[in-house]
Image (cartoon, rainbow, N blue to C red; front, side, top):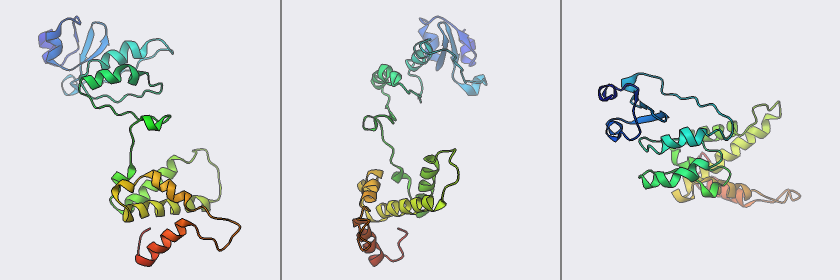
Length: 212
């Protein structure tokens, strides 16, 4: 067993055999079956396809035991939040940094700020194009392209304004939404100017060549 393990082969041994387990990073396949995770040595497909109905024990019997190995980094798709609740504290105790991307309760999850990856005006255009393409229904048919182009132009202008004329702590999508709400005007008054109009008039006055 010892020789097979050093060569990165699949090995079978009892859970209590701690000496063998310390020699290599292992993945659990069954109660007494482990496999080396050193793909460079074993040259085997490390993908695992687990099939089972709801409540069959896929998480409890396979995912959970492998997480509790705490022997590598993990990315878990966890729609119900069960894995996070059951193993999050354990992993933190083992020294892991936990990142939780929670779409349902965004105030309880980790956050991602696209502004951190903007380094040029071209990056702004890429960000807006990506945002719109990923929020447009794939089965959308026809429609006047004027509205999508207008949406693109507005988002580019707002993001560019924050990127070029505000401090780092103001560069986030919360402020993009605040600027968007500042565009509200009385539609019955043709001469009305919104707070956003005033902002961009100042930009045009002091920086006529501004990308925003």
